[in-house]
Amino acid sequence: MSSTPVAPTPVAEIARLVDGMVKAGRKPTEDDISSIVRELARMFSVKMDEVAVLELAQNDSILAFVYPLKLKKAGSIPLSTTNSLATRTVREKRPEMINNFPAQKHPTVFESISLDAPDNRTPKTDRQPIQKIMSVPLLAENKAVGVIQISRKGKSPTTAGPDFTIRDLTTLVTTAGIIAKCLRK
Image (cartoon, rainbow, N blue to C red; front, side, top):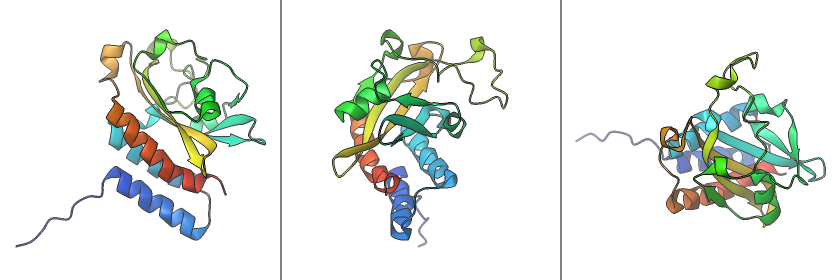
C-alpha cells in the first residue's frame, strides 16, 4: 500500500520558509516574500496582487511596501495618515475585517496603480477597486513592525467574491505572528 505525499498547508509552508530565514539570521529576499505571498493567496483564495505586506521604516515613521513589489517604488504611507486602514492597524495593533471597504473613507492612491501593466497605463476603467479587506498587524514581541492586508478586488462586492469571515481573520492573525518573526532584525 503506497501513500501519496500530502502537500503542506499554506501555514505550514509559511512557517517552514520563516524558520529557514530566522535560523539563517537573514531578512527575507524578494523571492522569499513572493513565496510567502503565494501561500497567503492560496490560503485565502485571492490573487497575489490582492495581498499587501508593509513594514515600518524610517524610525517607525512610515509604512513601506514590501509587497506588491511594484509598490515598493511607488511610495510609502506616513504613520500620521489619519484615514489609512494600514496605519490604523499598526497604531492600534488591532486586526480589522471590512466587507464593504468602498464605504470607508480611505486613500485610494495605491489602488490606482496598475500592478499588471509594466508601464502603469492600464485604463482606469480596467482597474479593480478593493471591495473587501482584512488588515492585521505584524507584531514582534508585542511591538508592531508592519501590517498584512488581504483584499478582494472587483467592480462590486458581489463580483469580488465571498465576504471574509472571523475564521479568516483569526487564521491571518495566527499567520501574521509567524511572518513577523522574519521582518525585523
